[in-house]
Amino acid sequence: MPMQCAVYIMTNRINTVLYTGVTSSLQKRIWQHKEKLVPGFTKKYNVIKLIYYELTESIESAIAREKQIKGWTRAKKTTLIYKMNPEWRDLYDEL
Image 1 (cartoon, one colour):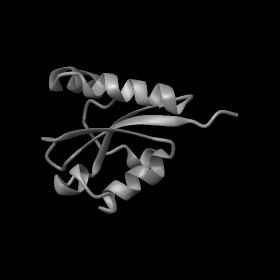
Image 2 (image 1 turned 45 degrees about the horizontal axis):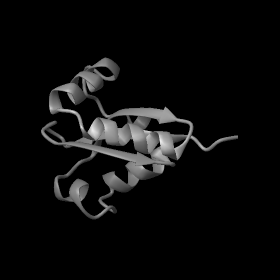
Image 3 (image 1 turned 180 degrees about the vertical axis):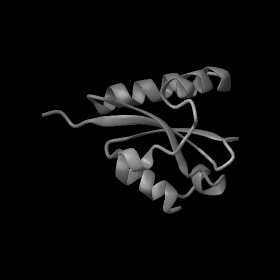
């Protein structure tokens, strides 16, 4: 069975920052961000809310999708988020 990977978008409490990432263990990775165990951008900008994710069948497809989303404007990313999560609620507890 292939490993399921994910592309995800997170934000801070007031939804001013967008962070796009990729992982092979979504629940674990989001927990690491929330606990500030990941040094760098997410820790610096208090990125704690999972607001979007999509599952893929391979790490290669997840990385390709991450690169695609990272190349988008904020407006296009916002449209993607609103389709899945119009209230921008934290989806972590639903994983």
